[in-house]
Image (cartoon, rainbow, N blue to C red; front, side, top):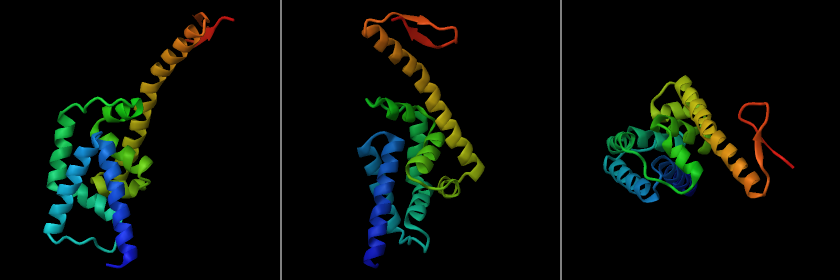
Length: 172
């Protein structure tokens, strides 16, 4: 293996670790799964074909029996609480939405490549990404209104409703 190929492969593994952490919400669990996957992958003498390393590695990761079982178990169990609110919101998404969102919006895969990785139609990946984003925004809106009210009241301002539903204004 050429040094350039080796560097690209290591970079692809770093991306895979980041992806597993984002999906599972736990670095140790993600790293453990990737280690098992890589051991099985090497033991079967599988080779990455001439395609890009990230795409080939992510696709093999999703096709791996151990990884599929881990995703199924994750879907059945509620993910553990995470202190970071955004990460908690992402972890609250169904696994299929979370996978599409992370692959496309965080890992910079195209809808086409993400579809290949998780074995869905490209239109389904696009729909899942859009639904994930919509759900995250829906979760954020009530939290933001509550935060705005707390800030205004905490600053000594009284709050009252404006004529526009859901909008708060502070009295001076």
